[in-house]
Image (tube, rainbow over all chains, first blue to last red; front, side, top):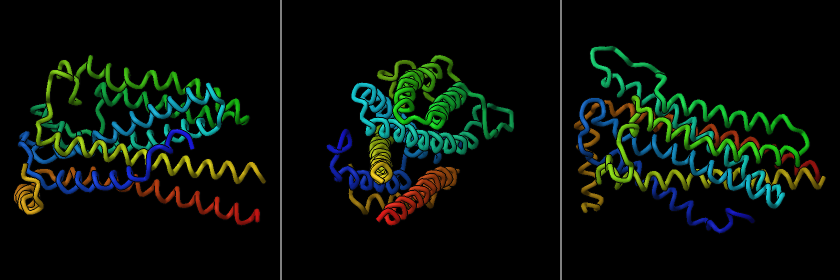
Length: 236
Length: 59
């Protein structure tokens, strides 16, 4: 049935295996000491960053769903678009709240001679992420505001394409240009500048793939549930 | 590559027990992720129960 069908259940076991590896080795392995408060909290790279990878993956699936809906008018694609945006939003909120905890501990060192330990700072990355989240909140509000199912699907699909177009410039490009407290803003060309050492990569990549597969699993359950819901309510 | 299990366990001894610099931050992050996924699971469970009831009532 549609896009998700070619992903055989094997990927679920792969997700669990990769996440188990990421938890055990990510917490247990000795890593290069990055000094100060980063010495042990650098392990958060394995858990905080994949949240955002999940968000980008889900929003990409979402915009593909919206485009396919506009071409084929099949309600499956509308459900796929809405549910992947919801799942992506969930991972975005998890990424935001884990980032708040991590930055509170580590960023106080970046501003010498201050007791800075804020829950929130208006760093460009954080600000832009909040704007992106509000853009997607508007997508859900738009959906809940239209009663006619066909119109709702069509209008929200068009909106979703514009929302997705703002996501990467807002949360990736602008923070890179502006710099700020959040890492990743000042590293030059990301393809030339290697900031993660091999010890980190050996855990980070499996963790990222594991979390992305977990997100796809969650999405699959949501889509299956809603298709069932649709079927049982339509043929009453 | 030291990929055997014993080596990983030996490393865990050093990584977890002998250096305790702010490791609680990592636990807090993992806890947030765990709670977030848990809330999602509970909500999904309730929705499916409601759907089951709906299908039961129609029969």
